[in-house]
Length: 224
Image (cartoon, rainbow, N blue to C red; front, side, top):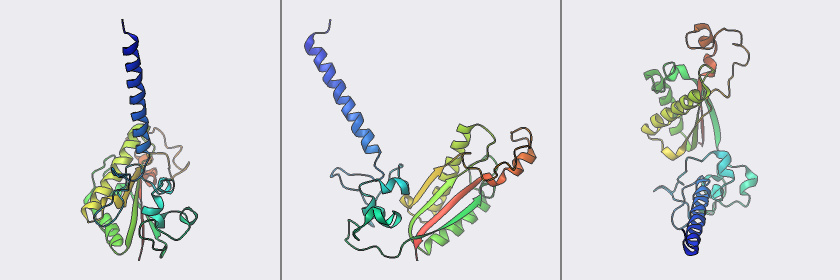
C-alpha cells in the first residue's frame, strides 16, 4: 500500500514533469534558436539561427522577429527605426521575385530526386540569389490530387527539401532557405480536369491535365 509520503512524492513528480513538458512546448514555439542566456543564437556572420517553425508570418509574432528579420516584417511591427541589435535604421525594403517551376522539370513523376534539368534550373535561382543581399528563399512544394493526401503531403515536403539541399550545396546559407510542403491543397487547375476519369497514375490524360499542379514555388527575397 502506498503511504501518504509516497503519494505526495508521486504527485510532485507528476507536476514537475508537466511543468517541464509545458516549458519544452513553449520553447518549441519560438522560431529562433535561443541559447542558455535566453538570447538568440547567431552564426559567425551575425545571422539569427532559425528553427523548423520559422515562417515570415511566425517571425512577426516572435519576440526576436524585429531583431532578426525586421526587413521581412510589416512596417508597423517594428516601428521605431531600430533593428534591436545594431541600432541602425531600415534601408531599402527587400523585394521578392517568385519563380514557379514545374515539378516534372525538376523531378521524375512521383519522385523527389532532382533531375539534371532540375539542377540546371536551380543553378539559375542560385545565380539570381548571388546577385542580391539575400534575405530568404521560400521553396514550397505542391502535388496533384492523384494518390492519398498523406502521401502527397510527404512528397511535396521531400521535393521542397531537395530544392533546399541543392541550393545549400551551391553556397546559400541553410538558414536562409525556408521549405514547406502544401501537398495537393493548393491546385491551380481548378475544375479543368474534373471529368477525366479514374484518378490514378495510369490515367495518362488526367496526369497530363494535372501537370500544372505539380510544381515548386520558389520566392527569392533580398535587396540589390
